[in-house]
Image 1 (cartoon, rainbow, N blue to C red):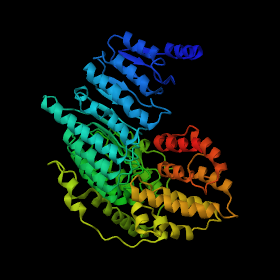
Image 2 (cartoon, rainbow, N blue to C red; image 1 turned 180 degrees about the horizontal axis):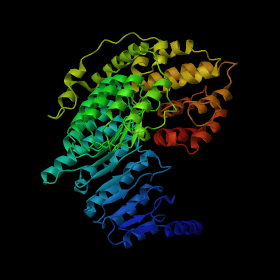
Image 3 (cartoon, rainbow, N blue to C red; image 1 turned 60 degrees about the horizontal axis):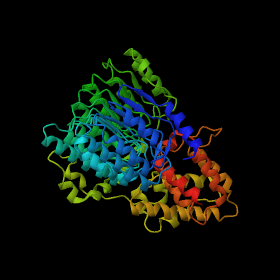
Image 4 (tube, helix red, strand yellow; image 1 turned 30 degrees about the vertical axis):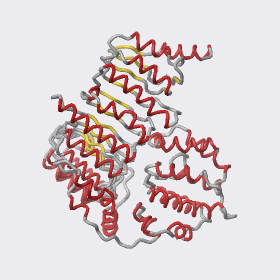
Length: 568
């Protein structure tokens, strides 16, 4: 290591915070590649008596450095909290599992009894879960109370591995007379989808001690939500449920409402952007009205709730004296509905708890009900993917009613239907000619229409092969046609796309894409194709590199795209 690098490292380490049994290297941007790079960190660890918490967030640790740090941890039996989020910045995915294995083995060797393990914001994917699977099953985690895996790109496969490890940990710890008593579980932004959520729901039902569950932005719809709801019902200590930005629809909302009736400790319900719709909102309102006297926050924002249902929700909180916040923004109340909502709450002397209604979508007609019913039917085929064997493997505390697998006839789909209400199933049901059909019916001389169509196609992206292939082929047909047209303005296209993604400001008020995962993964494919103008790559790279909260929530997809762009 060069002398100037050693000086910089020494300066960073001088800022290391020590106190209360905690050693912190948080946010020091240390680049620990080799054993030599890690010498000062190791020294700090070795000299710290009674180490209970180690913070490594905001640094980057390579395989070799992880091995020597692990060696230093082998003697730290009192270690209880590992704050190891965002500690593999810029690392290849293949580097992360061996680094985690080394660190995990050290904790097992030390005889540590962990209370908290935080590996959030490490884009390690399903393989990364294998990296700490052994640790989770070991005595070091029998005492675990908080597990935080936010924004790790685990996917369905990683979710299943994690669920199996938690069940094994519970089984082994129970055999020793001290069952795993997990209190806080965080796994937002992981694309767990129905199968990953269902697997974890089974584990939650076995554990039964959860107090907080945070699983926002996971692409879960009503089968997975129903599974979670039934698992939550046998976790009576639950205080916080955060499932923001998943897709309940009425079926999922009703199932969750039934569970809420059985829970007595609930303080925070965050079902914002979950498409609970009016019928689901009324069911949740009934649950709130019947009990939930400790409720402090209820978020049903951006859920396509109409006026009467929103007013029913407001009426349900009349005796909730602990309530601090009610969020119904982004629904369909209309100006009159918003005024009525204020009047109801003022009547309870609770107007102060209501959040902003600035994004209200205005009152809608009832003619959309048929579309809502059709969308719910669209989700039914996903149930069959789990198959009979998985249904039979569920524990006696069954998570999903086996009748849910009954096939439901699907209505015919055309391009207009798919573009109006995109879903993976609709894209697949368009058949092998879906790419040609969508390209033919899109006016590629209109940049805004091309961007809108691309965003709708990419919004249904999934890591499953059939859907991924369909998205890629449809994108290729559309964009090849667009870019090959002499009248198509490539610069205007990338500008409009960045605006719609929320990465570039516009003079007009634009509602940005709710999740960038699909478009980022689709762009990762697009930029590698011959039709994509290489002149656009630096522009795209510049904006995707900039700090942005929406991009932070999709670190895995962002990392994949940037890696590809750098290789062009």
